[in-house]
Image 1 (cartoon, rainbow, N blue to C red):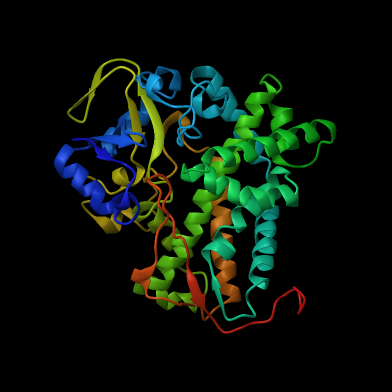
Image 2: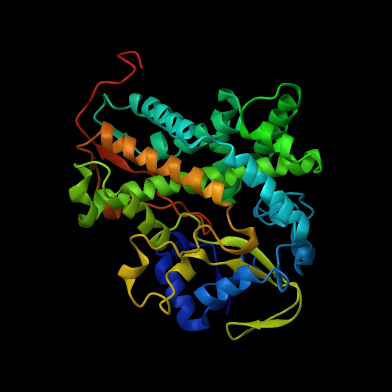
Length: 404
C-alpha cells in the first residue's frame, strides 16, 4: 500500500518514517500526495544519484506527468508541481543550461563582503528588538526574518515588499491552504520589481538578471526571480533555526557556545546531513517505462526526490563520523543539472553562518527556555524546521541605543 507523504510521521519523526519505508518498500517507495495522488519517493542514495544525474530518463518537464487529468485547479501543491510554468525549474536541455548559467552570473555579482555586512546589519537590527528583554523566540523573531530581509535587499525589493514576503513565502512553500495566495503575492511583487528595474537599473540581482538574459521573456525572468527568493529564504531560515537548536541541545556543541564561533560550521554541516531543511523535493518524470530500485516505473510517473531519506541511507552511512565534519556529499542542495547553483549555495551559507555567529556574539549566555523534547516542527513533508525556538539570556543593551 502507498504511504501518505503528508502526516505526523513526515514532520514529527521523519527518520523513522524513512526507515519504515525502506524496510517495507526498499529505496523507492510508493506514496500518496495531497488528494491521494500517486507518486514515488526516492530514498536510496544511489537511486537518487541516478535520478538526478540522468535527465534523459528522468526529466524535469512536468508536461510528462500522467496524473494531470486528476489534478484540480486549487490543488495546494500547484505552486511546487505545476505545468506550463516558464521558470527554470521546468526548463530542460540547452535552454535550461543557458538560463542556469545566467542566473549564476547574476548571483555571482554579489560582493561577499557586502553581503556579509548586510547580514550583520540586519541581524543586529533584529536582535536589537528583543535583546533587552532577556528572552526571545529565535525562529519567529529572528531566523524567519533574517534571510528574506537580506535577500530582498540584495535582489532589489523595497522594505515594504520584503516585509510581506516573509508570510507569502512561508505560505507558498508549506503547500497548505494559503499556498496559492502566497504565490500570487510573490508573483506580483517580483513583476513590479522587474518593471521598476527596467526603468531604473541599480546594483542588484534583479537588474543583473535583466542585463544577462535579454533572450528570455519577461514572464520567464519573473518566474526565475520567484524561484531565487523562495528557494533562498525558507531553507536558509530553517538552516539557521535548526543549527542553533543543535548547538543549544547537543553536548558536543554546547561547550563551545560560550566560546563563540568555533563549531558553527560543524553544526551547520551536520544539520545538512541529519536534519536537512529541504526534506523532499519535487520532482522528476519518467520519460519511458523503466526500473529503479527494484520498482517498475511507468512512463509519466512522478518521482519525488527524498533528500533526507537518501542522506540517511544506511548503505552509505557505514561510518557516521565520516559523513559529518567537512564532508559535503549530502543531497541537501540536490544534484545534477537542476541542483542549486553554486553561487546560490554560497549566498545561503553566508546568511546562515553570519546569522548564527551574530547571535552567539550578541547573546553569549543564551540557553533554551523550554524542554528540548517539547519543541515542534512545521507540519510539512517538504521543508523541515522548528515552529519556535524560545530562549533566555541576560538582557543586553541594543546597539542602536534605547530607542532601537
